[in-house]
Length: 458
Ligand code: SF4
Image (cartoon, rainbow, N blue to C red; front, side):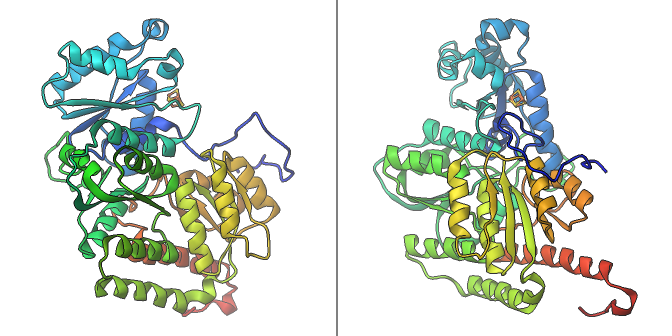
């Protein structure tokens, strides 16, 4: 077996990560940039970084993730990447004609210390940025943070470069959806629209990375937040930031710069987190919850109560991004399941505290680790086996080694489809998650049943 050498005995490790539960910052920055209409993400570094980031996104979304690179060579590594970036900006606007180039840095350009603000200004002064077009940027050194903080940094870049205040308050709410699937962004928009609330969602990758096959290639698909919308975010009544790690940075920047108040919520995954989302929308916008949403909630509660016996007491190990893990843990608690091991690769002590607070009433202590890795998760599972593992595709090795039912959730999912099209947020998304968890648990019962107890109806 692939991981047969993972020892059960856990030793203190401080200078070695084995199978990290995260990927690097530019992946998230690139994903966020694809959520702006007619935007070309640009990787300021060597070609290898850009190829890796593009392939990570392409393999997850099964769509071509467009991006360009400054193509550093030995010379740029020594003398800096200014000449490469200015040449790239000129080439990109000439050849690919985007409205925006969204630059993110890489380990190499950060180590050199390239000043992207200054290079962008010089490109403009040199006439390389056509009238009405923009170059924005964020810093994403990958020796800190993760793909989630890269996403957060690019969202802040959108606010830094575009948000304006005209002084005329609009009855519109900004929604920052977090690092979620295009299908999730679509579902969040559907729920907010159903409540009759006007909104600007940024970024918005729906219609960009989950669009239809039309027979025609389009470099810039229909979807994505527009420049006009991004500019208008400074005039909005408020901002809802979904997921603290991915969305609060941009929301707080809007608050500080333009006095647009923000509410920071958990991702609306599962019953109680979706309730909190809908209730906050109701309060901040002063609107009633429509019957259609109450109906969907009722369906989800019905399914939970019908199938509660199968969820009850099942032990679960989870790994992935902090915002997803917080909401998933709440959901497991809603179902009377037992989260026992929780690991994120994304750094941030707040995560451990949040999980500890959420699970404080449990009669056992939950293993939780930020900046953790999957090696540790595997060791924990060896010491205390679980009934279900939830995480991205990389968990399949542990699932196979330990023979655990495995629910793919999060980023990246490289070996299954569906995540781009079916949401896991909201009540409808919750019903889908419940179905997937139940399928796994009931398949396990069927597979393990002795011949004399193999039942048609469970
Ligand atoms: S970790 Fe750094 S060097 Fe490696 S792919 Fe990411 S940005 Fe490039």
